[in-house]
Image (tube, rainbow, N blue to C red):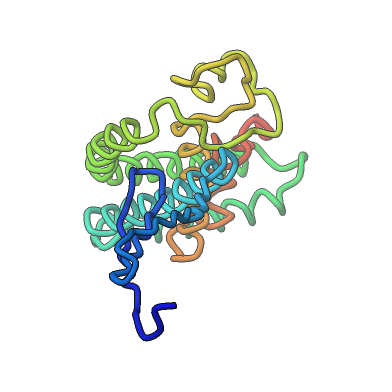
Length: 236
């Protein structure tokens, strides 16, 4: 039957569901034969956990970049200045000298020696205050930049759970850790809380790697958040 005759195949899309229609035209038969085939589409959608993990990695990267930016601004405005270098060297020298004297002095030391140590502590305190004042101008510049960046990042991550905390924060911290998040699961972490935690830890390590962190002796004598309070009361 009809040897030598050929049929032409024509393909056409039919609808939006991925179904295609094959039209086979056979001239010798004078008929159209329709054959329909369906295409299989596999759509891989990211899960909530993978999205959260990606957000966490992105926020850590943002924290590293902003910490480097902060140290860069501080270096331009503070670290490279002669005044800061001289004050830092003086504080380091006084801190080590004072630490050695405190290690060698005994409870039975004379009143004159105790007064001498107190004067050195007062001088060190004044130098630390001057050092803080020198760094103040960089803090204003960093604060201005971070305020602008925080506004942009908050709009991007607003209402998104970016991490899961392994603990339930204290009630007075939940306003920050659960900020703008829906639901009552307080292990959900907001952008601002994770960003602050990352920045605090990352910036300190960057300062140590770049050699910009204060020495152990200076930190110990400074007291406050950086170390134990001065031991002046021991000699009073």
